[in-house]
Length: 327
Image 1 (cartoon, rainbow, N blue to C red):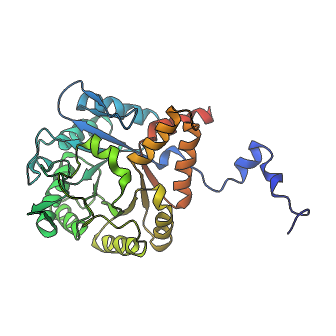
Image 2: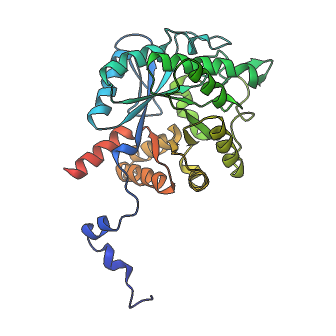
Image 3: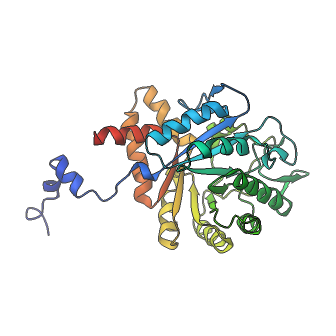
């Protein structure tokens, strides 16, 4: 059909038509809220580069979790900032570690909420890398046991799902074995399968106090130029027992989300990361764009690319917008 017989604008002329033919529907069920937890009481340290987000002590973390639950957000992901660090990240897998205590506090109060824990060592090591360092090299194989111990300790504390973000080879299989051997075969793994070595992580590293003290993470996080490698990484993680595959970051890698969605039949998650959040917030504060509209357009683009779930610092705001639009 061609103009004038076919006029696409006919179905754009009012909101009713637009709603009826909308191809991508973003809902609160798509959202996962990342939260940062720190030792202490009555603490809410503002994260300067992420307006509206804080490092919370457990008591205040529970209040934020309540907000998420009240808005119908189905899941939160917990990132811990420990009271001390060492070369072997011992506080990452300690029974009384900050994430373990946070999970133990949250789950009894919010039994229906899906509590996911980030499994990595960078926040817990004094060198800031995601694994055991030998000289100036991150040693892959000696890191695996520590990651498995961390994931197991989170699951024993009550985590519903664990999410390894370190990008060590073989870590999904090691974690799956540890969970299964300890009677926790029901705990799923959300794997950061395609995690790129990105400059968009800057605000997060300040929030999690996890910047590397030397070098960078190019030897384990992916080269931003590669696409086929992302499919290989996802396939390997699936073979090792991953239940959900994640792409991180989201916006610069919408093509990767789409490609993985086409290639695999597992749920796909995308991480709308701190730098993406910070850019929109900064531009909104400068009056350069409508932050709320750009937020919703951004999240819709990630869903349209193929993500089944979105980790986003916009979760609370987006849920509010969606609730208000329905009232």
